[in-house]
Amino acid sequence: MKAVVITSPGGPEVLQLKEVDDPQIKDDEVLIRIVATALNRTDTLQRMGRYDLPKGDSLYPGLECSGTIDAVGKNVSRWKIGDQVCALVGGGGYAEKIAVPSGQVLPVPPGVSLQDAASFPEVACTVWSTIFMMSHLSKGETLLNISFQIHGGSSGIGTFTIQLATYHGVKVFVTAGSEEKLAPCKDLGAAVCINYKTEDFVARVKEETGGKGVDVILDNIGGSYLQRNIDSLNFDGRLFIIGLMGGVKTEVNLAGLLARRLTVQSAGLRNRSRDNKALIVSEVEKNVWPAIAAGKIKSVVYKCFPLAEAAEAHRLMESSNHIGKILLLAP
Image 1 (cartoon, rainbow, N blue to C red):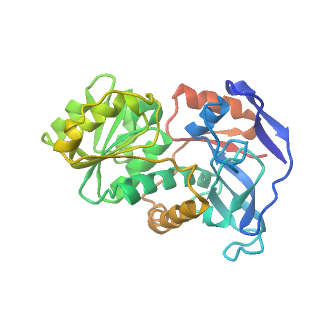
Image 2: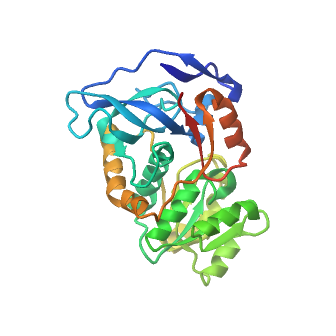
């Protein structure tokens, strides 16, 4: 098969499409012939040599995919050859085929094309496992979604989170670096859209909430935003850190944590066990897929590239000149 190989740590030019060995499935796995995969920020970090792969993960980038099942292991009962599916994977999505544990496979959501289904597994599992399963975001609360690239709503995580949280009756605040980025966030249901380049988002959050702050923050920035995130939280507020684009170290005044009973959590998705990933995937199918089927959450795909143009796709992601997901299409 063909797969995108990281020939050496470096810029996008190190991504090359090459002939590699076909994957071999285990008894509890399925073989998917890939139609599409989606880019994630982790892919760019892996390309640069700044991401330690969990043991057993594929050396090829790509954390989600969609396609058709070509073969099933002898212990697999739910899936059969020919099923159209999407999947959360531990690397290897930038390829023509991939072996995936059966518990990490999802049916293509009703009303979604097989190609666009590749845009859902990683964001759905990340958002549901963090702000819903762990931070227990609930109807009537408020969410400030601070994500990578533009600190908010127009990233892949952001556009999905706005829709899912709004569907569950949550008032969503987002930040972004331009009015052009904020406009689609508003269209997707964000209640408060903050341009972080022209406004202090802490002050705006306090203004919009009568001085209280938001209940949950999803943050992919890390160090440089930690104090401002804490300052933006309501009593019993929860900060969930899913990325460290703003650094790993900072000084923070802990008084606010004590005074307002705040919780700071952090978790990745890729380094979880197969059993834990299967649990998250099951919860996503139960709680998120119905919203997609009802048309309440739509795929937001900015641009598609052929697999051979993975380098160009990475350049686009790193430019931050996109809204939503970027897809790679297998030959």
